[in-house]
Image 1 (cartoon, rainbow, N blue to C red):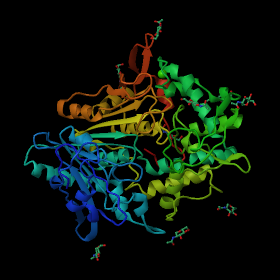
Image 2: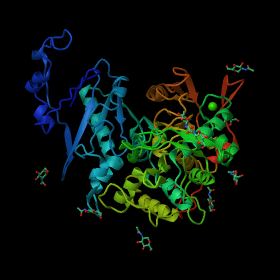
Image 3: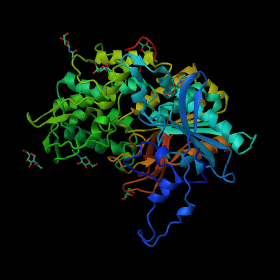
Image 4: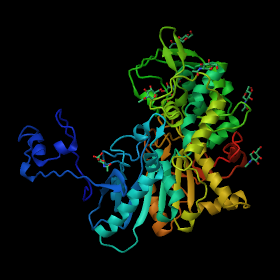
Length: 566
Ligand SMILES: *[C@@H]1O[C@H](CO)[C@@H](O)[C@H](O)[C@H]1NC(C)=O
Ligand SMILES: *[C@@H]1O[C@H](CO)[C@@H](O)[C@H](O)[C@H]1NC(C)=O
Ligand SMILES: *[C@@H]1O[C@H](CO)[C@@H](O)[C@H](O)[C@H]1NC(C)=O
Ligand SMILES: *[C@@H]1O[C@H](CO)[C@@H](O)[C@H](O)[C@H]1NC(C)=O
Ligand SMILES: *[C@@H]1O[C@H](CO)[C@@H](O)[C@H](O)[C@H]1NC(C)=O
Ligand SMILES: *[C@@H]1O[C@H](CO)[C@@H](O)[C@H](O)[C@H]1NC(C)=O
Ligand SMILES: *[C@@H]1O[C@H](CO)[C@@H](O)[C@H](O)[C@H]1NC(C)=O
Ligand SMILES: *[C@@H]1O[C@H](CO)[C@@H](O)[C@H](O)[C@H]1NC(C)=O
Ligand SMILES: *[C@@H]1O[C@H](CO)[C@@H](O)[C@H](O)[C@H]1NC(C)=O
Ligand SMILES: [Ca+2]
């Protein structure tokens, strides 16, 4: 257990002989690793003051020979404010920062004990401990990842907190995280709603099977259309879309705050023939910040790309934007909003033939090889014979196989509603990794399941009493967007949540701050769905408005499946 007043200094020791923390977490070792007097500026280290303790905080499950490691950060007793913060992970990590502080300081600063877990994966990523062997799923690890590990970390930590500070008072229980952490947050809201007072989720990867396999949709579109666009061509389409759609929200600031108006008013086929140029680069395609594993290798070189937008390029882009449809034209999933980068569509340059070709998306490729085919390999290697119908079938297989573990889209939030818990859910409107509309679809599913027979206005208002969704203009996946840098990002969600839970202040508008670009430092407000921002009076006044046609662009009916997909 690391018991910390408010912050910690981490000493990272690299040594060729050490194999574990046990080897290096000794006082004598740390003392020898410190710089000698006078070698760094004018400093002199009091080595006798140095104390190192190796801490192993583990628990197991009775009857199961397992070991789960926990970390809790504890505020000083005078700073403790009867709060516990549960944090989550990203990608296939159950917790962000299992080996570092992750987002723990974010809780301690609000007087909250903050915790994280390794899920029992012994420091490994979940995708590396998911299969016991080809064909054999480690279900215990899968359930730990799905929802159980985070829950146990919270339950054990909260009990420890009460005893540690010797308090019988209520300890407010919060959750905050984005992406996979957003999925984990929903796992808690849907299964243990009564245990939480406030859950903050960003861009959740919660409709897990559809989400992961959808990373392959762009590749299958390219294959089906028979055209592999140079990255620069798609980049131009993104840039031109931003230019065309930015002003539709009433404020020309380089940010698309109304991708729905963009869908209604801008047709990318108008770009056919537009010239594009990208200089040669040595770090892969030019698009976006990229979250796919494929783009992390580096060292790739792409040639200068000079051309004009083609009819086939537009066809690829538009088919991707329309979302996955099966061979009968039935909607199987949804896509990114116009203005988002086409990360999944990135192609690979072949210098021998001077052509662009297929590059299988790493996220989608790994999900299919491991989680669908149950083969312990990092990705499928071909999309031969893979059609839109194959993607639909894979999605269905993953959905039903992981419905009670990783797939986290149960729309019944009665328990958290009755318990008085609150939910803040946010999502970047130009997210290129988890489609923004996937969050909208879930919120609309919850509204319809929980308030049948009520009007859209009434049921939206009722749901807003405890669950609010905010789309973040122009933002990318869990962060700001290099292509639309002037947009604001919500930075004080935990403060807003504490105010809602402990003081009853409803976050009708969510505070956000511009972190880069021309407007850096300016503050903004985010509208609560289904209301959408619209600026008037020469962009000096923002209103949150309802517009039926815009709303309709966000609504999907997944008729490719016999079951309803929430
Ligand atoms: C429990 O796991 C440890 C470490 O892997 C192993 O040494 C031990 O034999 C196991 N015990 C049982 C009862 O399986
Ligand atoms: C797209 O816009 C970015 C600036 O946001 C610029 O750096 C890039 O060169 C543009 N790409 C193309 C193809 O015009
Ligand atoms: C975009 O324009 C093309 C060409 O005029 C047309 O075929 C297509 O239907 C339009 N798409 C939309 C969504 O209006
Ligand atoms: C791109 O190609 C066009 C037409 O061939 C040419 O006029 C232009 O100079 C080229 N631009 C660059 C930057 O190479
Ligand atoms: C698992 O399957 C993959 C793909 O067929 C194969 O390459 C690998 O050797 C298999 N692993 C084991 C341990 O059999
Ligand atoms: C694709 O289908 C053809 C015809 O059924 C088959 O011969 C081929 O092996 C398949 N390719 C792959 C990679 O499965
Ligand atoms: C519901 O209708 C009222 C009155 O028109 C309006 O002020 C409010 O914004 C609407 N709320 C939602 C969530 O649509
Ligand atoms: C609108 O705002 C811009 C930028 O603040 C300013 O330059 C312009 O004069 C304004 N236009 C009117 C009609 O007020
Ligand atoms: C979805 O489509 C099906 C089949 O066309 C229809 O029966 C159903 O009512 C639709 N659901 C919604 C919510 O529109
Ligand atoms: Ca704008």
